[in-house]
Length: 253
Length: 229
Image (tube, rainbow over all chains, first blue to last red; front, top):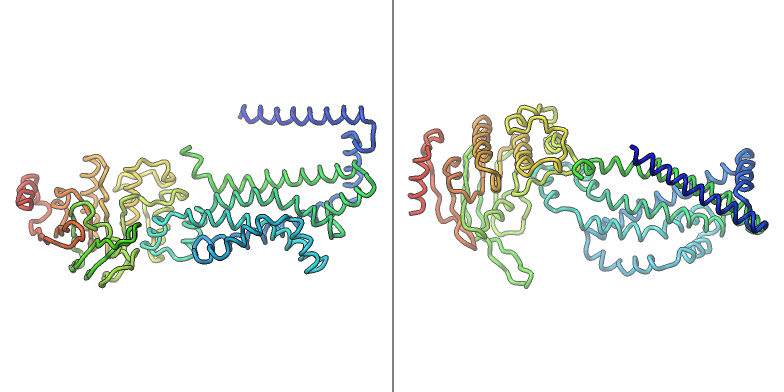
């Protein structure tokens, strides 16, 4: 516990140093291009009071969640299929490599051109940029499933649901965790690009709007707010879920 | 009744050759009969068990298992590391045994108080006993054991052999047990099959008519010299 308190103190100290450096740089620059932290916080506050901030945060967060769920579901299904079925893997592996190397920007632009500037195209494009990563990770996990345990489950006649929940999914869990972690980090950044290119709301749209006014204060305010939201997602959702799933491993470590 | 009639079982090796593992293995085992299978390494004992368990269906011939459930104790414990000892047993239970009290069985196997532990917290010997408990818990009609007592110390192995016989006597099942240990086979079995080197086939089928309680150390010593000759 003393260690954790110490860690927290170091994190706070490190953030304080960052803010001090920022303040100092802003004081020296005296420019609209580098506002001091105080004015960014003031802007954040007025946006929060007017409700504008919450609206755009919520819209972006909803897109992140939707794209994440679609990417995980689709990517997992494809990954399991490729892991189990060798012929499919041989046929579709080049497609995966192609998609993995296609820049997200290209996918977004094409999605908007082909499917129009709408919500489905936006979320779909973001999901699609993440699907191959998830598929590759889950394919790896599927291949690593222990055949000895599957045999045991067959001998003891585990029903399919029990087999999936207690034998297969726990073995895939570390791979889901890895896909989730890299997925959340990647998706929220790409969602901002999608919003910038073709959506009338969301944090990405706001940043684009204030970019046209060269309002760095607003850009930083929205970026900071969203980073905080994503950190909260990480600490309140991703990490507790992971701890729960791996609690059996903690004890013998 | 367990009826086994295997014509042949071959494996394809990495170099593409067919390797005959079993050839013409025919036997039937009556309900509640305890059979030990022994033979040199590589004579296909574990393969035979895998065919009977239905894990491997790629062979020539036919196998009819008795009606009812099958349980197995593999060479490795094969426990789910992410579930507690108790959950490992409960998950193997069929629907109609779902509410069974497991603590008496765990107690009997010297596993009292381990219900909430994860397999990673157990010694190998304890994990093997959990695997035994899981097999007993499902009350099988056919129990398959692949060297269940190997790598346990003598005292534990002896005690577990007694537990095995106690549980089996209370609820007789057809038992097929692979063992390298001839003394163990002579202590436990109604019949002993001896497999030949690869391709394995049954070269001897010994019936032991002496009741188990009369099988003293002396009797076992004599029987071994008889078998070896």
